[in-house]
Length: 151
Image 1 (cartoon, rainbow, N blue to C red):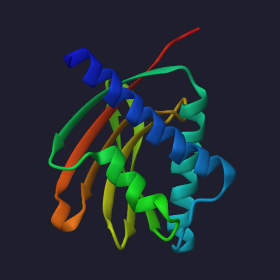
Image 2: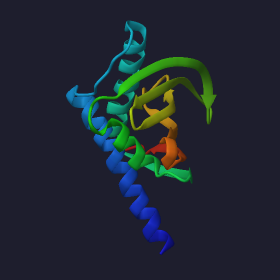
Image 3: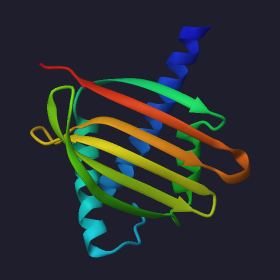
Image 4: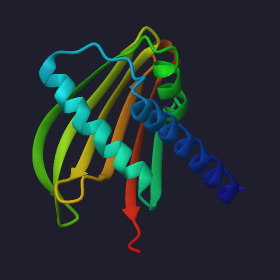
């Protein structure tokens, strides 16, 4: 039963990430932001696109009362959300130089406050952390670690 839940959760996460990636790829992500924030979101979206095309394994850790994958789908579902991104800092993650970005999505249904660690050399997302606040429905947190296979 435990393996079934893990596989089911992995499918849900993969589906949500693919949905977000598809929105970025097709350019239908609704964005209301300043020029600097838009440029930062362009960097985040480019890293997501590149990551979705790469062969990767993901390990996911969830906590809280709210399913983060479903909450993000609700927040972005009707296209009326706003997104803002910002370069926070440069740091090393598992020996690799990264740029750490914030990626915040807000709608009337809730807020998804994310951070991404993007490889400076490969342009791939190495880690993603998202905290969602869905008001009365509750909060949740999700951390995804990406591992890219070499061919």
